[in-house]
Image (cartoon, rainbow, N blue to C red):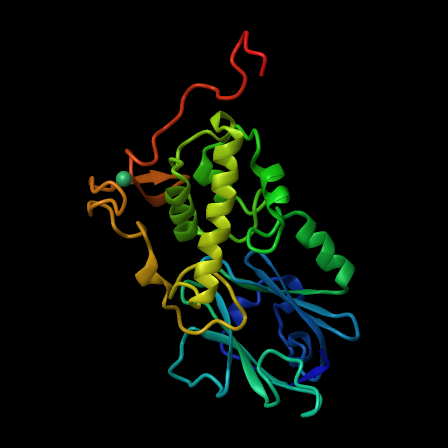
Length: 283
Ligand SMILES: [Zn+2]
């Protein structure tokens, strides 16, 4: 896209987790580089430069990347790195923020995120090949292939970035509720139809989250996100004990995949029997 990084500010050097970044120098944070592309896979974003360098920003549990017109202030303790990006030419506004220079700001209140410097786009491909398909961008078929027949609890599988990339705790609960699948449901017991519903629910949930700018302080990731307004749209997240929006019975709070979880045991009934072909049927 040809924009140039004309200034980098780094608030917290211990965010620079990889060996190559432990003694950070501005050049490692791509100061002066011309940006070829901004890419995202799951919870990782990458700034790829025209000279082949790559800076990966792993957003962890609470990290966000946003474009802003002003640099973060000193009081903004969660803004760890900010890149001032100058578009190439006012006549080519093919950048998401238009013609003017903007700050790309990495904030991570809970500090599980990290930055990593890679030598080439090939190294980035290798890194991202270890992840499952991007839950927001990948075609439904790819997500079906990732989940079908897994002998794992549904929530654990959704949160495992090697299975699907980009689903965090909130969106796992919201998706499972939408699909009527219990968080502890073993995926290999689900019918093909139910799996299709689950994939659709994941993509509907993530689309709603991105459209509304993502949840404040939590998971989802969008380079153009505004401060999140999505939390008011959560169907069940954070509502344990309240009435289920579908059936009115109290939502249960539980722990699944080691994470705080909310579900409706009525609308998300556990299926223990293996679905699919019944013995003796013609299929
Ligand atoms: Zn219910």
